[in-house]
Image 1: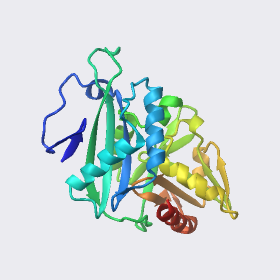
Image 2: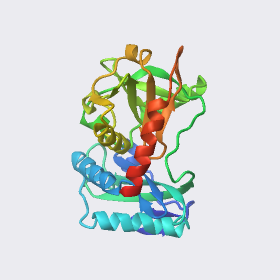
Image 3: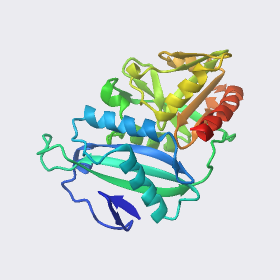
Length: 281
């Protein structure tokens, strides 16, 4: 079952037509959330990012879109799908619900909520080999829009096809200054000695929720120095560790990039702190 503008519909319902602006122009945003035993992880961070993104896109935010209302809608769908006692992946999509060409006739919005069951209520480290490569066919154009989770993810899609065609687990995206920005499905962190770097938002990376959690955690750990600085492709092969973060997987260590292999010592020490933060939040 899915939620469409507050109404619960069967998964195979046909509720969008050809004039939908999300379909036509990618005129929409989405949040990917993890729900564990009816608790939305990092819900306030997700909510305020969504509200900020809607304002940036000049969408009309409905009066009922309060923190409490959207939480109730999400958890209501979780319950309808009988996922309240397990772990679920939620996609909350909001789109401008208006006709028109590039110029919409109004700034009203509609929304959908989808829920599917996933494993691992806690964040765990995947010890399997995980190889990445740079994707350089297209570049991320840094700017405020590149930091948002919009409905336009063509670089991520084409990069994912490239990765599959070449037997990579993931690809790293670069911006038009040739700096490494992020992975196809998450933010990037680089470890060298006691220094941990992640690209700044000004380089064009997603303003990720898990990125925010890791920055908070690492900022309070004395043995590491966290820096938000540009990462050049040259630095990848000099790093001790690389890892990717997003809300669903938590932390994904990279084990190989070209001829370079990486350790996972720092990653394994951080994941425990992340799970503690989840339990206390």
